[in-house]
Image (tube, rainbow, N blue to C red; front, side):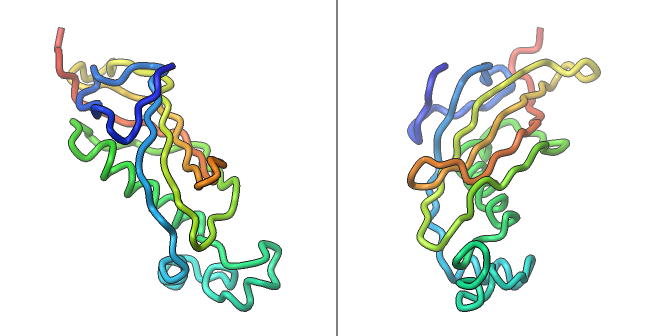
Length: 158
């Protein structure tokens, strides 16, 4: 398994994705204001929007919505991994797990491992890439994980 860092050469076409390859990239610092703003709009539970009430909750303080974590990961994926690729989008994600709370001041990054690649059986101009995506905090603890399926154009048609 090889590890690529934030200075890696991005995979562009389906042909560039190699099973076992690991990419680590992104950096976002989570602010209290951002947690509250997202939650007020999309997930207004007290432990996401009220720092005082959140202290008496099971989490012991304000935490980001799991959906906010997903959105932050998607932003880093777009900015640092797939924005210049031949991506055709995704039919979906599986197995989303929120493993640790995200708190104000946390710094997040993304770790992607390519699990499986195959050319589409019905459309030979595209390939399917299955990846394990983990978001990690500054202590390298996994805060969120999901399995993704991406569709990409094939560069070298045979």
